[in-house]
Amino acid sequence: MSPGGPPRRSWLAMNWLVHRIMDQHLARAAAAYARGRLLDVGCGEKPYHAIFAPFVAEHIGLDHVDTLHDHAAIDLYGHADAIPAEALSFDTVLCTAVLEHVEEPARAAAEMHRVLRPGGVVILTAPLFWHIHEAPRDFYRYTEYGLRYLLTKAGFEIQEMVPLSGFVVTFGQEMVYFLRQTWLGRRLRPVAVLLGSLIQTAAFVLGKVDPTQDFTWMYLVVARKP
Image 1: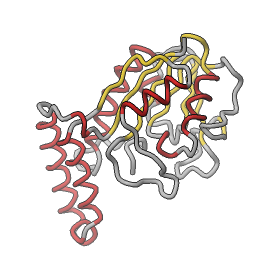
Image 2: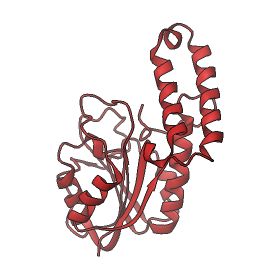
Image 3: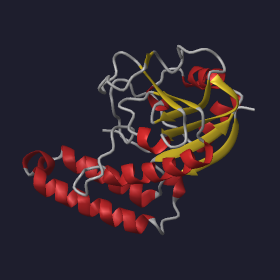
């Protein structure tokens, strides 16, 4: 499961660490920037609805008909590069761990710009170091420079570009995913889960003093439409 999926906060979950970090950063961004009508591009099951609810008037979820997630939270069916909404109809766009799954990310960025009102913001996350997930719809990884180019070319002004982890968190979490796929994870799952929780706990503690942001698993970007 990617960190864009439904949060799993149990200490024994295989991915509680990335969900905790993502939740914290999105909560801060929501309080600082979110307002009005929000379009959640690639919404899945709207895992961040509760985080944004205090700050927006409406939370509209967009996803495609072939999504692997449950459809109950979807309000609009369509693709990120062809959003079925009128121009200037939203104040906030949320797009978490979606751009890597979009064949034409430049068109998606242009569409998000189109549907936003002037002064509106996109709050977006995209991975740099992460394993293949939701195959075969997994196409790209992004550096901060690629994200900056993509969004500024679409007409946005970058407000924030925040790496969400360093080496320890990124590869600690990836080690946990790796363990799940090994003989240990398949045959002795309780042992693998416990070991994975210990690895994540150590990475959480060590990550607080890890300066290696070039190894981030994910960037959070806030960009404004002038």
